[in-house]
Image 1 (cartoon, rainbow, N blue to C red):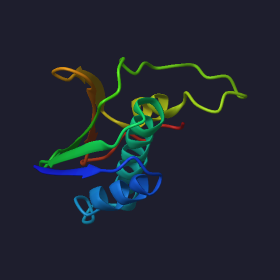
Image 2 (cartoon, rainbow, N blue to C red):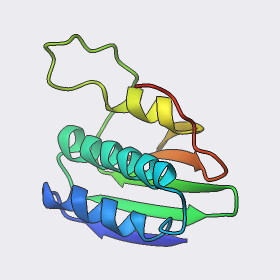
Image 3 (cartoon, rainbow, N blue to C red):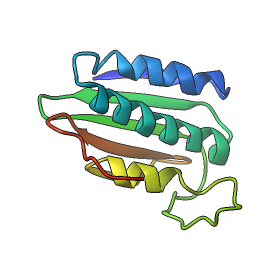
Image 4 (cartoon, rainbow, N blue to C red):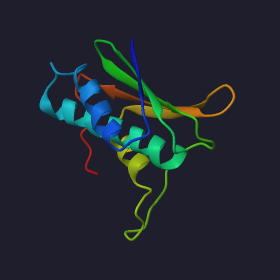
Length: 128
């Protein structure tokens, strides 16, 4: 299991994506792209909605990569149906379409962990 703390900056999203990419660099391009997009969306949500830095944890098995993004924000993320003019609200729909499973765990005290499982034996191919 690998873990890293990221600051509350826009550059942290790209850093988190690159860091996680190293865990799946032996996988086909479509799986690497799926991992990058899911990690980007989860980390972006931590910055936008929690306004805090975030912890990214990743664990790889033969079958899947499990990523967890923890932040200090209140509330639980929910799937939304954003209208075309809304600037936010599509991230979890993307995660839901690409990950084999995802969820939210309330952290002790303040905050939460949003996790996603990405299959490595053929990531879900879904049009988003």
